[in-house]
Amino acid sequence: MTERETRYVFDGQIQVDDAYLGGERSGGKVGRGSENKVPFVVGISLSDDGQPLRVKLTPVSGFSLDVIGQWAKTHLPGF
Image (tube, rainbow, N blue to C red; front, side, top):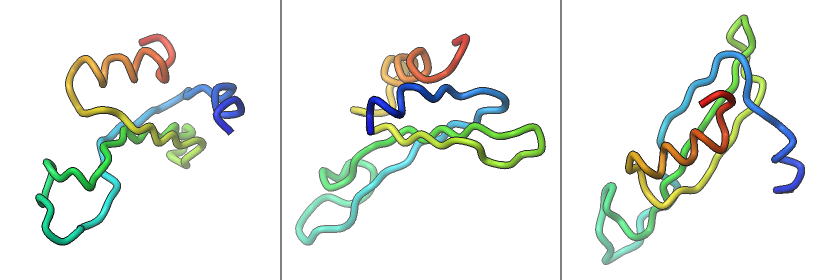
């Protein structure tokens, strides 16, 4: 599946956001610092009329400028 995904490139209008995946476990820390949640970058490529064409969910180590910059260089054309 990873090999197949590398063929697809975002184009057109692109929207990017951060997200967390994970749930609550008893006894753990809650919120953004929780060890039970995994940070993701979510990118969506839209057509000219605003319809979604492609989505990419990428787990990242965090949302620092370096991490997001590397994600953008890898996944966004012309960045």
